[in-house]
Image 1 (cartoon, rainbow, N blue to C red):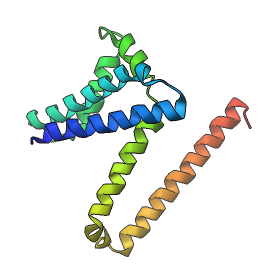
Image 2: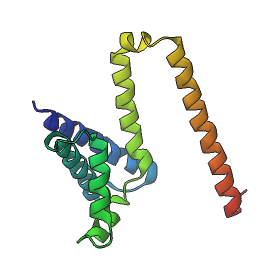
Image 3: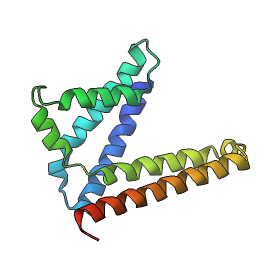
Image 4: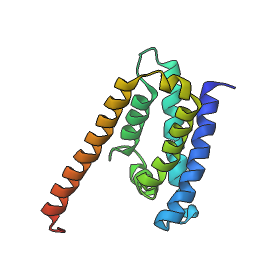
Length: 149
């Protein structure tokens, strides 16, 4: 199987799981979010394809971001429809299956992961801690500006 096909198949599985998570967590029926998910899957597949055919050493996520930006700028035809359809997908419903897949990948490579050593684990803990504390500070500032707290 080609890499692009495998990536697209994985995107479809994650997309299906995200639609279900979106329905359960945010009460958005699958009928309303399918079109947005198909657009996100298509954008991602185009990004994977561009990574393979463009001779520049840019990761797929760069192409995915570029395609996403280009098709949602106001001067692009149908951009308002694309933004409307994709806004039905909550970011948390996308993150859950992706993080589960990442966890499974780390679990499958546990021997390699354990060889990183104590220094890498300590750095990882500080990165997670810094991200968490940074998020707390940003949330606190925004909520105070809005007068919520």
